[in-house]
Length: 288
Image (cartoon, rainbow, N blue to C red):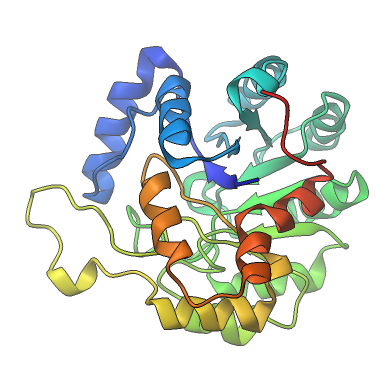
């Protein structure tokens, strides 16, 4: 069973304009059209059984609507192969009630994006969310490292993640992008001895650039194969989750890259789905 632990979709009516905006900011090209149907088509081509969709609330006003829509969409997860997490914003007035509501809706976790939400992960507003999420057994996925569109923002660099983990209560925290996009050495040094999980999203192979001359060739390379394998073994494959950040990386391309690595069969199976199944409390391959 292959689980893509980190994907994004957008409502059909705004998917095209959203991708155009994000592509312009990041100077990178998408691999799907950003819709749920586009992601499902990608999954079929790549052989992905389940994609976890991670919505981001950029305003507290969006939170309840996004969570209700996620729960509604999840009723069709067995048919679509798409299962959505919920979202929370650090400035939600009724943050505790919203997290309780997320758990009551059956959502397995929440996505945080400190850069887009304008708050550092070790801020008290996030620490209370992390602690309560842990009490509710919700998984928390946070952007980690540099953000490709806002490279000067340091809201969730590995040292910030470490400070948050040390101050919050026990929580199943996934630091996306191998613990810190473009800060992988720091992630390895600071986070390996913590309980933090990693996902592989937008960290393997190369950035797919727009044809606008923004990137020098050497800037396109992400984690090299030997660096990736070293991190898998340092953290343990049970703490590494396959993810793509679709539409910003291709599912087929990411799987081909990962399957070509000199990992053992057990390591590969854990990263591609076994670790995610255990973290989410899922059974074997879902009914489709």
